[in-house]
Image (cartoon, rainbow, N blue to C red; front, side):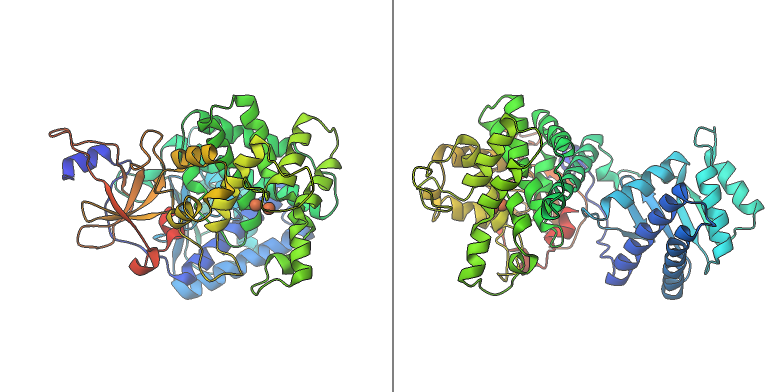
Length: 492
Ligand SMILES: [Fe+2]
Ligand SMILES: [Fe+2]
């Protein structure tokens, strides 16, 4: 691939050296962002003199103390759709996303890029800072100037406001400026929030409100119908802590995309997405020590685990306003571990056949479960290994037409697969191609000399303008561990 072609085909520029955030800064940066968010949100509800504000205040001051002791002066910055602490980009996951997005939105409304912290803070100056921050007239022509001047007047000197940083192509955050990708990410994390709410309601035997889940699913359906397949890439971002919720959302996203491939109309895609998000609802009845057990389950534990399809049916049956969607969801919850070859569970005479939705969910459920890190096995399978096991040794378990459509949905090298290109570069698949199962979009991680690079995304469907040849092709899938590649970091 020549450089001119690369520039033309890259979604973001491949440039710069890797900036692996130190573990300490990653943890402290996350703490800082979350605590600043809590501080501001609390102050929206309670006056800064209120007792309810004192906990968040102490937590924030403590975090600044620790960071300043370790780093000296430091700053938190919003660039594009990411937060940075000094030069280190904070990794987004489902639990940190709402806090990060809150800060990014609040900073943006005030024309702020972020803040520099130039010393340890006292409670009075943090209180002044918070009051001023919330009082800024965000409709003013120059909210930044108003805020900055007020801070100086009140002698808040160790919190220094910084102007908005505009991302430049080739620099940090530039690849995420595209609005559609931003929407995909937001939709994804909102869906995880909805799945969490539904599962926790089921666990605590509270009434389940499906409205949020339905809205979240509709957002996913819209993205898929707009061919915004970057949302499929997000399903490869596995988070240990959020596994149960994220799994439900991944299954929903993959099921909707597969349903679209199969030609289902929009209304049915919505129903399929909701049924998919609820497929493991019954796991809310399984004790967490069984779900997370690292050793083999004994017979009693297996019985509890294998009962989750029936528990799911019972939970959905208790929902208010039983309708066609609820009935479909019950059927999927019951049948998703039955197999096409009539193996699987739960065994119930006369109920061995799966409906279409269940056959779809069974395929994507298996794929997502295989690619996740679980306590009971040392390594997750790579997406490439998982797909190949499904189409070889496990092929009889799945409806062959649906399995074939699934390959066309995620591609032969599904998102999250580390690949060697014929340019001798190494990259990670971030998005399948709707046109060619062998030509996904690949984010470059290593150059021809195997030196780390960051950021450039190459569409393998692109051709060289001069000779019409593809700019690059996949040679093989690689084991990320052999190349010291952290998949989660590479995808985030
Ligand atoms: Fe399940
Ligand atoms: Fe599942």
